[in-house]
Image (cartoon, rainbow, N blue to C red):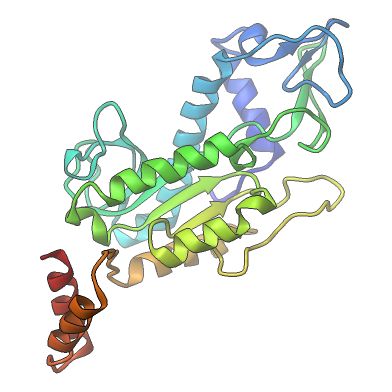
Length: 289
């Protein structure tokens, strides 16, 4: 598996889920008798709320992302694990990680084995119609329907940020584990500066989209924000290289609220060490005291 997200992946989702789910669980039913993935723009007929698809697309995208990441890390002897649990860093049975990159393939993980945490915020991007012959037809991108898929939804952004912060503040054991939010859509421009600030602050290491062309007809599609808090991948190799870079160096998240006098004292003590590595170790140790 080396293909990124696209229409064929969404077609695969519908083909697989229709084996055990009804069209009414997957699609909206319009007044004119058609089954659609989203209400088209301009549709003013009777509407219903479709909740049953959420868990189905959630399970599918987490499994799809796990397979994608596994292809990128298997040559390193690493594993992509779906639904990983690690209570030490707030990944409980009730709120597991969507995917982790780990030295271990077990569901129950230790902080020492987890090399990265990936939260998946994906959904159906295009609009689809189930025709009377049971064939699926793509009838437009997300600009043509009333839905806000993936990270175009503010609640998805806020949930991703909230869970990441919860992991970050759970314990010092989480300070060395990078966190990535994986999506299949761009983000709205109101979040451009926020995702850059989250990356600079070290809370989240990136909002990554693995959908090279979410809009038809070469529509406007952001590649990256100024500080690369958001980044769109256009090939599997590009994604694999970024994952390798993410795992290549030991990182440390640090945060504190100290007076300038106390901070100056910490810097002075840390600066007495001979190497950059030791200076960093002492600095981080003193911040925690």
